[in-house]
Every structure is written in structure tokens, then in C-alpha cells.
Length: 187
Image (cartoon, rainbow, N blue to C red):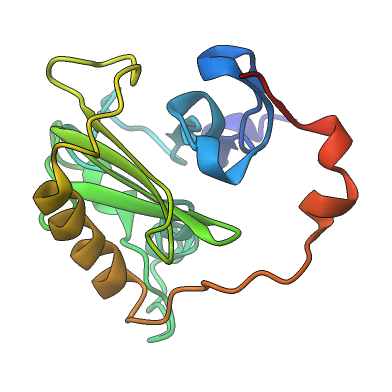
């Protein structure tokens, strides 16, 4: 039908699952390691373009997809969108997105903070924290939170700002509890 050249195509996946990495199996909030939360995002724009293009040293979110669709359609995006229009990168070279030097990601009452230097997995009431120095531990194996409380606190402040100081902290019962037999953390 010759639709490919004029089609806008997004390739994205859902979250991953832990299959024994870090001793975790399943989708567990306190184990938001890359294998669980990192997902691919590829965009094939419509028309003739010079590519491929990469967004370098920046983080993108799933909520960037809708503004990007509006951008490719040439439509003004509604004010309620939090994401960034990535369609502008089609005409430019490899690009750095300003103010996107870290990400935060929530799951249940836990949050992940990650930048190029550190990753922090934390319960939103700070009762459980894992901190990893990604320059010396890129596989996230050595929790250094106990000896780096000041770094944990600094990163947690960024989490609070991203959450507009409205972090979910109390969890009475969840679907996780109903299916806890499916998710195992080996000691």
C-alpha cells in the first residue's frame, strides 16, 4: 500500500522483568534496576529525512511521545503535557536535551533516581535505600547508601521536586500483595 514512507512509527516496549539479576525475580518496586525500567524508544518519522539521529547524554520519558506526535503533526500541544517534543531532532544532528540530565521513575511507594553518576532506589518514606556509584559500579552491584547519606539526601530532594512534593508513601494493600508468590527475592 506504500504507506511506510509517509508513516510515523514509534517502537517502544513495556517495562522489563528481573530474571535473577541482583537476586530478584519479577517486577518488584525495590528492585528498579535497568533491566526493569530501561525501555527502548525508536521513532521513524514520515517523509524523507537524513538519519539516524540520537539524543545524546539526555534522558527521555514515555510522556515525551504525545508532544512528539503533536510536533510531527504541526499542531500546538496542550498546556497539560509535561513532555518534550522530540520531533525537532529530525532536522538537527545528534542532540543534547537541556535540563534532562537525570530521570525519576515511581513504582508503588518506591522511586528510582538516575543520572550519569548515581542511581538511587528509595522507598518514598526513606526507610529503604540503595545507592550505586555508576562510574565505579556500572552493573549496580554495591549499595553505598549507608556511607553516603548526604548524597542520598541530595538526590531525594530532586525526587521530591519532580513529584511536586507529593510522593506516595502509605501503601495499605496492593495487587503486589495479592500476587506476592509470583515475585521472589532470593536472600
